[in-house]
Length: 266
Image (cartoon, rainbow, N blue to C red; front, side, top):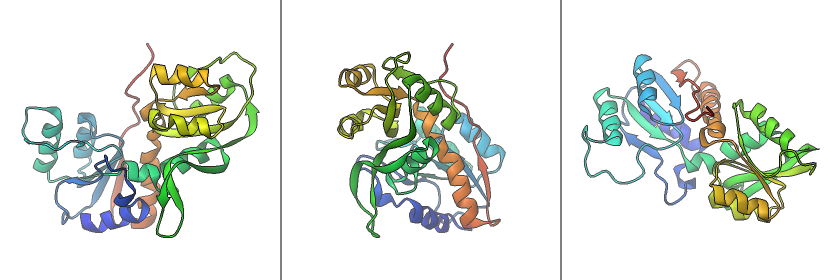
């Protein structure tokens, strides 16, 4: 199956047109006419991911985060980004990224995170527009837990939902305040912090927030749980494997990167 045919299937799920203006999703390296027998899925195109992709003989690498954000003036072995691009081209491995288009598309990152957390009565946190079929799309999600929990119980629930070893909490985990309404931004949460506060959320669950943003949110009455950028967004990999398996059947072999959290508590 050709790379261009697979891209059409990916576009059905999360069209590139849904991405933020500053983003750079799409076919970032390689041939669109490449015959693809094996797809490799990962969050980031790190050296360790390329090692795994090469080991399984991947013809197409699909990641959530784009390796290329800014225009490259040179592609050589002198910096880590162009060195990875050069490596993929040498191996004739095409490379496709699905970033904020996947974040924003209905049924994708935000909706998936909300489902895993068990949120109901959900709505888009930061609306960006309507799809061709009239469905709202945008960044993040807000909704309500089935039952009220303390902040400590909510933090444990987040860890269980995403299978992560630890989270950072802004607020009083030992407090008795009960939490029910949550706002969720799986990636960098600073950009939608105002929307989270406007949503009336008791807690903001995000993948990445700064110290000052966290303490400012608490000052305005909203707790924050930082689950780590990879901590939430690694759900991209399993979701995409299920989606592509359903769409492609046994036409293409689909492999996934190992789940390895890039930061840890020591």
